[in-house]
Length: 210
Image 1 (cartoon, rainbow, N blue to C red):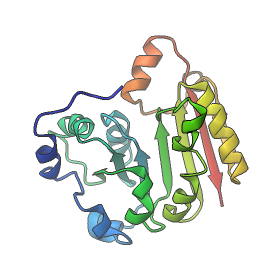
Image 2 (tube, rainbow, N blue to C red):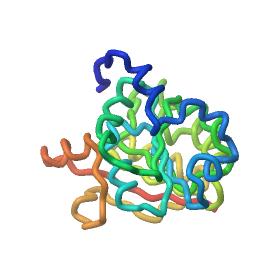
Image 3 (cartoon, rainbow, N blue to C red):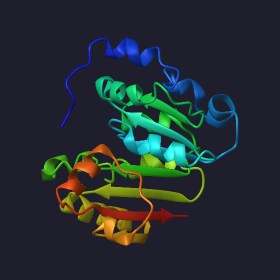
Image 4 (cartoon, one colour):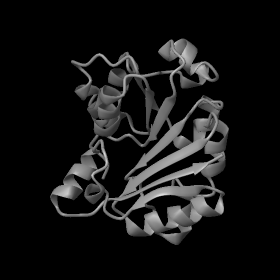
């Protein structure tokens, strides 16, 4: 469900210090020029209102986090939550995931895919963020060992992801059909909080590839 347009969204995004307005400029130099350190970089694709990545950044000061979001109005909602926070290990980018290889060059350690659009129709399957279209793009941005962590309430998407990742050479290291029951430390997205309050189980996987 997409948020309604936010008035002056473009101006708000362009003038916020958490937002990298020209991400292409920093390709090959994100740690050096943006974060000023050599810490690992974790990327959330489709960060929504920012609950997950803000919580991760707060809990993990020695990891650099980047949130990617396609829509300015959605990004504005995340920026509202950052008004009174000082998180030097967090930056946000408004871009399409199809352009990731033009933004990063073997700089990302972990990718998070949280409650991504399931694109349920067969003719739209290539748009799924674990499809054959996106996995080669991720190859170009991962630094070393490739790690993808996915959460979703959508069983068909989860099944599709398992097949796609496995076929592409990933090993499913961790998997659960009920993440809450595992007791694993978990930063919640806004969707996740809603689903859990309704008794909907969350599917989780961690896939890696050398």
